[in-house]
Length: 370
Ligand code: NQM
Image (cartoon, rainbow, N blue to C red; front, side, top):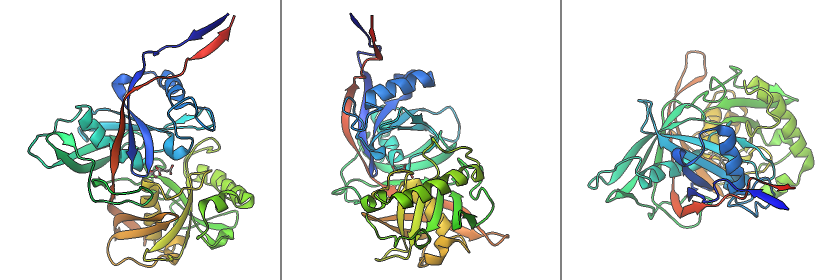
Protein backbone atom coordinates (compact mmCIF):
# COMPACT_ATOMS: atom_id res chain seq x y z
CA UNK A 1 0.00 0.00 0.00
CA UNK A 2 1.19 3.51 -0.72
CA UNK A 3 0.84 6.10 2.03
CA UNK A 4 1.27 9.75 1.14
CA UNK A 5 2.06 12.35 3.77
CA UNK A 6 0.88 15.68 2.44
CA UNK A 7 1.06 18.41 5.02
CA UNK A 8 -0.10 21.85 3.91
CA UNK A 9 -2.13 20.08 1.25
CA UNK A 10 -4.64 22.92 1.47
CA UNK A 11 -1.97 25.07 -0.08
CA UNK A 12 -0.04 28.19 0.82
CA UNK A 13 -0.90 31.78 -0.08
CA UNK A 14 1.57 32.94 -2.68
CA UNK A 15 2.03 35.71 -5.20
CA UNK A 16 4.16 35.18 -8.30
CA UNK A 17 5.87 38.38 -9.37
CA UNK A 18 8.38 39.44 -11.93
CA UNK A 19 10.94 41.39 -9.95
CA UNK A 20 13.27 43.23 -12.32
CA UNK A 21 14.63 40.68 -14.77
CA UNK A 22 13.95 37.75 -12.42
CA UNK A 23 10.79 35.99 -11.37
CA UNK A 24 9.88 34.52 -8.02
CA UNK A 25 7.31 33.36 -5.51
CA UNK A 26 6.51 35.95 -2.83
CA UNK A 27 5.18 34.89 0.57
CA UNK A 28 4.23 36.60 3.78
CA UNK A 29 6.51 35.28 6.52
CA UNK A 30 3.40 34.47 8.56
CA UNK A 31 2.13 32.15 5.79
CA UNK A 32 5.22 29.92 6.03
CA UNK A 33 6.54 27.63 8.78
CA UNK A 34 8.80 29.51 11.21
CA UNK A 35 11.28 26.64 11.38
CA UNK A 36 13.84 27.16 8.55
CA UNK A 37 14.22 23.45 7.79
CA UNK A 38 10.46 22.93 7.52
CA UNK A 39 10.12 26.11 5.49
CA UNK A 40 12.85 25.09 3.05
CA UNK A 41 11.35 21.65 2.62
CA UNK A 42 7.98 23.23 1.83
CA UNK A 43 9.55 25.67 -0.66
CA UNK A 44 11.32 22.84 -2.51
CA UNK A 45 7.98 21.08 -2.84
CA UNK A 46 6.28 24.25 -4.08
CA UNK A 47 9.01 25.11 -6.58
CA UNK A 48 9.41 21.52 -7.83
CA UNK A 49 13.04 21.05 -6.78
CA UNK A 50 15.25 19.18 -7.21
CA UNK A 51 14.49 18.63 -10.88
CA UNK A 52 16.13 20.24 -13.93
CA UNK A 53 12.68 21.07 -15.34
CA UNK A 54 10.94 21.79 -12.00
CA UNK A 55 8.04 20.14 -13.77
CA UNK A 56 6.07 19.39 -10.60
CA UNK A 57 6.33 22.89 -9.20
CA UNK A 58 6.12 26.57 -10.02
CA UNK A 59 9.87 27.16 -10.45
CA UNK A 60 11.00 28.22 -13.92
CA UNK A 61 13.90 25.75 -14.36
CA UNK A 62 16.61 28.43 -14.18
CA UNK A 63 18.30 30.07 -11.16
CA UNK A 64 16.75 33.42 -12.19
CA UNK A 65 13.23 31.99 -11.99
CA UNK A 66 13.72 29.72 -8.99
CA UNK A 67 13.64 32.43 -6.36
CA UNK A 68 11.65 33.15 -3.25
CA UNK A 69 10.97 36.39 -1.36
CA UNK A 70 9.66 36.22 2.20
CA UNK A 71 8.27 39.51 3.46
CA UNK A 72 7.00 40.55 6.86
CA UNK A 73 6.62 43.50 9.18
CA UNK A 74 9.86 44.86 10.58
CA UNK A 75 10.48 45.20 14.28
CA UNK A 76 13.67 47.14 13.69
CA UNK A 77 13.49 50.98 13.63
CA UNK A 78 15.63 51.06 10.52
CA UNK A 79 12.87 49.83 8.20
CA UNK A 80 9.15 49.38 7.57
CA UNK A 81 9.22 45.80 6.29
CA UNK A 82 11.78 43.02 6.15
CA UNK A 83 12.70 40.80 3.21
CA UNK A 84 14.48 37.48 3.18
CA UNK A 85 15.63 36.18 -0.18
CA UNK A 86 16.03 32.46 -0.75
CA UNK A 87 17.63 30.93 -3.82
CA UNK A 88 16.00 27.57 -4.43
CA UNK A 89 18.26 25.14 -6.30
CA UNK A 90 16.80 23.93 -9.58
CA UNK A 91 18.33 20.46 -9.88
CA UNK A 92 19.80 20.48 -6.38
CA UNK A 93 17.96 20.41 -3.08
CA UNK A 94 19.70 23.56 -1.86
CA UNK A 95 17.71 26.43 -0.45
CA UNK A 96 20.16 29.19 0.34
CA UNK A 97 20.03 32.51 2.15
CA UNK A 98 23.70 33.17 1.43
CA UNK A 99 22.94 35.74 -1.26
CA UNK A 100 20.63 38.70 -1.58
CA UNK A 101 18.66 39.52 -4.74
CA UNK A 102 18.14 43.07 -5.93
CA UNK A 103 15.75 41.96 -8.67
CA UNK A 104 13.21 40.32 -6.37
CA UNK A 105 13.77 43.31 -4.07
CA UNK A 106 11.97 45.39 -6.72
CA UNK A 107 8.74 43.48 -6.07
CA UNK A 108 8.93 43.67 -2.28
CA UNK A 109 7.41 47.16 -1.92
CA UNK A 110 4.39 46.49 -4.16
CA UNK A 111 3.92 43.07 -2.52
CA UNK A 112 3.96 44.64 0.95
CA UNK A 113 1.30 47.14 -0.11
CA UNK A 114 -0.76 44.36 -1.78
CA UNK A 115 -0.73 42.36 1.44
CA UNK A 116 -1.59 45.36 3.62
CA UNK A 117 1.77 45.39 5.42
CA UNK A 118 2.13 49.03 4.58
CA UNK A 119 -0.86 51.30 4.57
CA UNK A 120 -0.64 53.73 1.75
CA UNK A 121 -2.59 56.94 1.94
CA UNK A 122 -4.89 57.26 -1.07
CA UNK A 123 -3.79 60.79 -1.87
CA UNK A 124 -0.06 60.15 -2.03
CA UNK A 125 1.09 59.31 -5.57
CA UNK A 126 4.35 57.68 -4.53
CA UNK A 127 5.02 55.18 -1.82
CA UNK A 128 8.40 55.16 -0.13
CA UNK A 129 9.14 52.09 1.86
CA UNK A 130 12.26 51.13 3.78
CA UNK A 131 13.12 47.47 3.39
CA UNK A 132 15.49 45.62 5.70
CA UNK A 133 17.26 43.02 3.56
CA UNK A 134 17.80 40.24 6.07
CA UNK A 135 20.39 38.38 3.96
CA UNK A 136 22.87 41.22 4.31
CA UNK A 137 21.38 43.23 7.20
CA UNK A 138 21.28 46.33 4.99
CA UNK A 139 18.44 48.71 4.14
CA UNK A 140 17.00 49.72 0.77
CA UNK A 141 14.42 52.41 0.17
CA UNK A 142 11.92 51.58 -2.56
CA UNK A 143 9.91 54.37 -4.13
CA UNK A 144 7.09 53.41 -6.46
CA UNK A 145 3.77 54.66 -7.77
CA UNK A 146 0.50 53.87 -6.00
CA UNK A 147 -3.02 54.77 -6.90
CA UNK A 148 -5.79 54.72 -4.36
CA UNK A 149 -3.68 52.60 -2.02
CA UNK A 150 -2.72 49.98 -4.63
CA UNK A 151 0.61 49.61 -6.46
CA UNK A 152 0.68 50.81 -10.05
CA UNK A 153 2.36 48.29 -12.35
CA UNK A 154 1.84 49.93 -15.72
CA UNK A 155 4.24 52.62 -16.80
CA UNK A 156 6.77 53.82 -19.31
CA UNK A 157 10.04 52.45 -17.94
CA UNK A 158 11.90 49.81 -19.94
CA UNK A 159 14.59 47.60 -18.44
CA UNK A 160 16.86 45.30 -20.43
CA UNK A 161 15.81 41.68 -20.40
CA UNK A 162 12.11 42.45 -19.97
CA UNK A 163 9.81 43.08 -22.95
CA UNK A 164 7.72 46.25 -22.93
CA UNK A 165 7.54 48.87 -20.22
CA UNK A 166 6.23 49.13 -16.67
CA UNK A 167 6.09 51.52 -13.75
CA UNK A 168 9.49 52.56 -12.34
CA UNK A 169 10.61 51.37 -8.92
CA UNK A 170 13.51 53.39 -7.57
CA UNK A 171 15.77 51.55 -5.20
CA UNK A 172 18.17 53.53 -3.08
CA UNK A 173 20.87 52.11 -0.92
CA UNK A 174 22.85 53.83 1.77
CA UNK A 175 25.33 51.42 3.27
CA UNK A 176 25.72 48.25 1.17
CA UNK A 177 29.42 47.44 1.45
CA UNK A 178 30.43 44.26 3.22
CA UNK A 179 26.92 42.93 3.85
CA UNK A 180 28.18 39.41 3.12
CA UNK A 181 31.98 39.75 3.35
CA UNK A 182 32.36 42.10 6.33
CA UNK A 183 33.90 44.93 4.30
CA UNK A 184 33.54 46.19 0.76
CA UNK A 185 37.06 45.08 -0.12
CA UNK A 186 37.52 41.97 2.03
CA UNK A 187 41.23 41.65 1.25
CA UNK A 188 41.77 45.41 1.48
CA UNK A 189 43.16 45.39 -2.07
CA UNK A 190 41.98 46.72 -5.41
CA UNK A 191 43.79 43.79 -7.03
CA UNK A 192 44.51 40.25 -5.90
CA UNK A 193 46.06 37.63 -8.12
CA UNK A 194 44.41 34.21 -8.15
CA UNK A 195 45.80 31.46 -10.39
CA UNK A 196 47.68 34.14 -12.33
CA UNK A 197 44.54 36.23 -12.99
CA UNK A 198 44.17 39.76 -11.61
CA UNK A 199 40.90 39.98 -9.71
CA UNK A 200 39.03 42.54 -7.62
CA UNK A 201 37.23 40.86 -4.74
CA UNK A 202 34.38 43.22 -3.96
CA UNK A 203 31.14 43.23 -1.99
CA UNK A 204 29.07 46.35 -2.45
CA UNK A 205 25.74 44.53 -2.17
CA UNK A 206 26.83 41.24 -3.74
CA UNK A 207 30.14 39.40 -3.44
CA UNK A 208 31.70 39.40 -6.91
CA UNK A 209 35.08 38.49 -8.38
CA UNK A 210 35.76 40.99 -11.18
CA UNK A 211 38.34 40.10 -13.84
CA UNK A 212 39.43 41.25 -17.30
CA UNK A 213 37.76 39.11 -19.97
CA UNK A 214 40.97 39.14 -22.02
CA UNK A 215 42.90 37.54 -19.13
CA UNK A 216 40.56 34.57 -19.38
CA UNK A 217 41.05 34.22 -23.12
CA UNK A 218 37.69 35.62 -24.21
CA UNK A 219 36.73 38.91 -25.85
CA UNK A 220 33.89 39.58 -23.42
CA UNK A 221 31.38 39.98 -26.25
CA UNK A 222 30.47 36.27 -26.50
CA UNK A 223 26.88 35.10 -26.03
CA UNK A 224 26.02 33.42 -22.70
CA UNK A 225 25.41 29.99 -24.29
CA UNK A 226 28.81 30.16 -25.99
CA UNK A 227 30.48 30.92 -22.65
CA UNK A 228 28.51 28.20 -20.86
CA UNK A 229 29.69 25.70 -23.50
CA UNK A 230 33.34 26.59 -22.86
CA UNK A 231 34.40 23.89 -20.38
CA UNK A 232 37.91 25.19 -19.98
CA UNK A 233 36.67 28.72 -19.14
CA UNK A 234 34.17 27.31 -16.68
CA UNK A 235 36.74 25.25 -14.86
CA UNK A 236 39.15 28.22 -14.66
CA UNK A 237 36.33 30.36 -13.24
CA UNK A 238 35.32 27.75 -10.70
CA UNK A 239 38.93 27.31 -9.51
CA UNK A 240 39.20 31.10 -9.04
CA UNK A 241 35.86 31.20 -7.23
CA UNK A 242 36.81 28.41 -4.82
CA UNK A 243 40.05 30.22 -3.99
CA UNK A 244 38.30 33.59 -3.67
CA UNK A 245 35.67 32.31 -1.19
CA UNK A 246 37.92 32.13 1.91
CA UNK A 247 39.73 35.33 0.86
CA UNK A 248 36.34 37.07 0.87
CA UNK A 249 35.45 35.73 4.34
CA UNK A 250 32.84 33.47 2.76
CA UNK A 251 34.57 30.23 3.75
CA UNK A 252 34.16 27.17 1.56
CA UNK A 253 31.96 28.27 -1.34
CA UNK A 254 31.76 24.93 -3.15
CA UNK A 255 28.03 24.71 -2.44
CA UNK A 256 27.08 28.38 -2.43
CA UNK A 257 25.89 30.75 -5.14
CA UNK A 258 28.38 33.46 -4.12
CA UNK A 259 30.75 34.92 -5.07
CA UNK A 260 29.54 35.71 -8.59
CA UNK A 261 32.11 36.06 -11.39
CA UNK A 262 32.14 39.00 -13.78
CA UNK A 263 34.47 39.38 -16.73
CA UNK A 264 34.82 42.93 -17.98
CA UNK A 265 35.99 44.45 -21.24
CA UNK A 266 35.84 47.85 -22.93
CA UNK A 267 32.32 48.89 -23.95
CA UNK A 268 31.18 48.19 -27.50
CA UNK A 269 28.21 50.61 -27.46
CA UNK A 270 27.43 53.75 -25.52
CA UNK A 271 28.05 52.12 -22.13
CA UNK A 272 31.05 52.60 -19.87
CA UNK A 273 32.09 48.95 -19.48
CA UNK A 274 31.01 45.60 -20.89
CA UNK A 275 30.24 42.60 -18.66
CA UNK A 276 29.70 38.85 -18.79
CA UNK A 277 28.62 37.33 -15.46
CA UNK A 278 28.45 33.77 -14.13
CA UNK A 279 25.99 33.38 -11.20
CA UNK A 280 28.13 31.34 -10.57
CA UNK A 281 27.58 28.30 -12.84
CA UNK A 282 25.11 29.67 -15.36
CA UNK A 283 25.99 32.71 -17.43
CA UNK A 284 23.54 35.55 -16.75
CA UNK A 285 21.58 36.81 -19.78
CA UNK A 286 21.98 40.27 -18.24
CA UNK A 287 23.53 41.06 -14.83
CA UNK A 288 22.14 40.91 -11.30
CA UNK A 289 21.16 44.19 -9.66
CA UNK A 290 23.40 44.16 -6.63
CA UNK A 291 25.99 42.36 -8.71
CA UNK A 292 25.93 45.36 -11.05
CA UNK A 293 26.36 47.77 -8.14
CA UNK A 294 29.40 45.77 -6.98
CA UNK A 295 30.91 45.64 -10.48
CA UNK A 296 30.32 49.39 -10.98
CA UNK A 297 32.06 49.99 -7.65
CA UNK A 298 35.01 47.83 -8.69
CA UNK A 299 35.21 49.78 -11.93
CA UNK A 300 35.48 53.08 -10.03
CA UNK A 301 38.29 51.73 -7.89
CA UNK A 302 41.66 53.21 -8.91
CA UNK A 303 44.08 50.52 -10.04
CA UNK A 304 41.53 47.75 -10.49
CA UNK A 305 41.37 45.61 -13.67
CA UNK A 306 37.84 46.95 -14.30
CA UNK A 307 39.01 50.55 -13.89
CA UNK A 308 41.47 49.95 -16.72
CA UNK A 309 38.75 49.06 -19.23
CA UNK A 310 36.20 51.60 -17.95
CA UNK A 311 35.35 54.59 -20.09
CA UNK A 312 35.02 57.07 -17.22
CA UNK A 313 31.42 58.23 -16.79
CA UNK A 314 30.82 61.97 -16.57
CA UNK A 315 28.24 61.55 -13.80
CA UNK A 316 27.81 59.06 -10.95
CA UNK A 317 25.98 56.57 -13.17
CA UNK A 318 27.95 53.69 -14.64
CA UNK A 319 26.29 52.09 -17.65
CA UNK A 320 27.20 48.40 -17.64
CA UNK A 321 26.69 46.65 -20.96
CA UNK A 322 25.58 43.02 -20.71
CA UNK A 323 24.44 40.34 -23.19
CA UNK A 324 20.89 41.68 -23.58
CA UNK A 325 21.35 45.43 -23.16
CA UNK A 326 22.63 47.63 -20.39
CA UNK A 327 22.19 48.32 -16.71
CA UNK A 328 22.61 51.75 -15.14
CA UNK A 329 24.05 51.66 -11.62
CA UNK A 330 24.46 54.95 -9.81
CA UNK A 331 27.32 54.76 -7.34
CA UNK A 332 28.35 57.98 -5.61
CA UNK A 333 31.92 57.78 -4.39
CA UNK A 334 34.45 60.07 -2.79
CA UNK A 335 38.21 59.49 -2.74
CA UNK A 336 39.38 58.03 0.57
CA UNK A 337 42.60 58.87 2.42
CA UNK A 338 44.23 55.57 1.45
CA UNK A 339 43.86 56.22 -2.29
CA UNK A 340 40.80 54.01 -2.52
CA UNK A 341 37.16 55.15 -2.57
CA UNK A 342 34.37 55.65 -0.05
CA UNK A 343 30.93 54.81 -1.37
CA UNK A 344 28.32 57.33 -0.30
CA UNK A 345 25.19 55.88 -1.84
CA UNK A 346 23.96 53.69 -4.67
CA UNK A 347 20.74 53.70 -6.62
CA UNK A 348 19.10 51.80 -9.43
CA UNK A 349 15.77 51.70 -11.23
CA UNK A 350 13.79 48.51 -11.79
CA UNK A 351 10.23 47.52 -12.55
CA UNK A 352 8.09 44.65 -11.22
CA UNK A 353 4.72 43.14 -11.98
CA UNK A 354 2.17 41.02 -10.17
CA UNK A 355 1.69 37.91 -12.32
CA UNK A 356 -0.47 35.67 -10.17
CA UNK A 357 -1.99 35.79 -6.73
CA UNK A 358 -3.43 32.68 -5.21
CA UNK A 359 -2.62 29.41 -3.55
CA UNK A 360 0.43 27.27 -4.27
CA UNK A 361 0.00 23.55 -3.73
CA UNK A 362 3.19 21.78 -2.62
CA UNK A 363 3.76 18.21 -3.71
CA UNK A 364 3.44 15.66 -0.91
CA UNK A 365 6.25 15.37 1.63
CA UNK A 366 7.17 11.87 0.63
CA UNK A 367 5.72 8.58 -0.38
CA UNK A 368 6.25 5.56 1.81
CA UNK A 369 5.96 2.04 0.53
CA UNK A 370 4.53 -0.12 3.30
O1 NQM B 1 22.64 40.69 -8.01
C1 NQM B 1 21.36 37.10 -10.19
C2 NQM B 1 19.36 38.38 -10.58
C3 NQM B 1 20.48 37.96 -9.71
C4 NQM B 1 20.59 38.46 -8.37
C5 NQM B 1 22.37 36.49 -9.45
C6 NQM B 1 20.41 39.92 -8.29
C7 NQM B 1 21.43 40.79 -7.68
O2 NQM B 1 19.57 38.70 -11.74
O3 NQM B 1 21.01 41.61 -6.90
O4 NQM B 1 19.42 40.48 -8.69
O5 NQM B 1 22.12 35.41 -8.91
O6 NQM B 1 23.46 37.05 -9.43
O7 NQM B 1 18.20 38.37 -10.13
